[in-house]
Length: 341
Image (tube, rainbow, N blue to C red):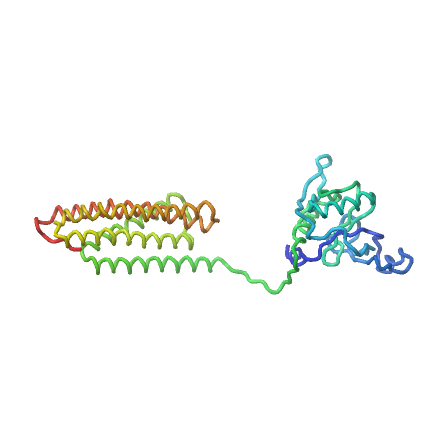
């Protein structure tokens, strides 16, 4: 694989003029001792198998019939009659026309697959080939390697090997750990702020926030989901959305109290008026998450799933659970007693 990637820019198919020959001098001797300007001598590489020893030399036409960018695809196949391994390839329309003209006029002659100035495979033309064909006489491994060369040889620029860097699983584990620490720290900071700013009602918000997280993690455990960095981001965003919902409700309750409403009426009106805004913000965010899930890839889809179920849990905890806690607190208060918010 490394050699194929490193060799991507120089794949070509040439007409075989003569060969194989044991030495370069022997190959030159087949031409009468002199090399015509239209020809070149190329040595075989270790992957040559269809035409003999890999150390042999071949006389090829200098101008390629087709090159790497002319290939649309290649894959290893088996002959349906004999079961032998082959390499099937497809050419672009323009290259197919050129290849058809050449193979029609040269049935029985040989063609060589040249990669990085080395003959990688040699095959005989059995019939005219248009935009698709097969290369026969290969083992299973050779068919796979040749198809890989034909596919990767279409890259427009060569790749030079410089260095190898191996990243172990510890990096991902450390990132997940830091992400969890960040989520916990952010949640504790939010809970402290809610207690400081909304006093007794902040306890209500914190309980709803904890329950929201428990529901979300319970869902992930039930479905066997893996906690990834995008998933942690979804959890953190869910915490923020949960706090936002409580802020909307609490501020509305404060407004009702400032207008002279009783605590019971203020709570009822606060939830009634904030409900529409909460549903609107959550539905629009869930729609965005659905689009991410439909058109995103693995990590993005994980983020969308975590965010969606976190928002659904938040609607339940911020509205119904929080309202139940408020009702329980109001039932214990004496008539006219102030609400801590």
